[in-house]
Image 1 (cartoon, rainbow, N blue to C red):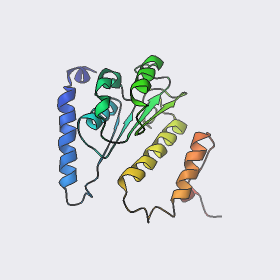
Image 2 (cartoon, rainbow, N blue to C red):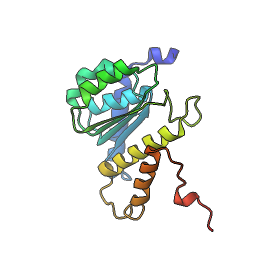
Image 3 (cartoon, rainbow, N blue to C red):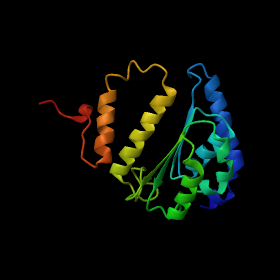
Length: 184
């Protein structure tokens, strides 16, 4: 927390933008880049999306986004936010502020996980929530595929299984992916 208090958020976003530029220019890159970050990184992903031009940005928890909502009009790409319903760092009034400012933009998807607490997707954390984490990760994967992958040919065979996983995760039904099942 002491390091967090000393962080220059503007410089951190500039560093992320420099990394984005480097990756786009790298020969192994298709030129399309995304930003996916957690907690403070969720806020940095949002700031990158409104100050620079990633192809897509995803933020988990996004603590502090409400302090930069005035920059939302500069959003340059699809933005997905995953917010824990029990997060003391982003309580319901703050989530309402974020929704009011950003949700009217059709490129923005805000998902609130009512039974999840801060850091719900961190598998080693005290508040890890497997159902919420899986649903958030599946939603993120779907957005990344829709925005970043130009040639969907190799995904067609596995896409129905992905959609089934989203359905089961949404409805909190245990689902074992096909690759984890033992042959009968």
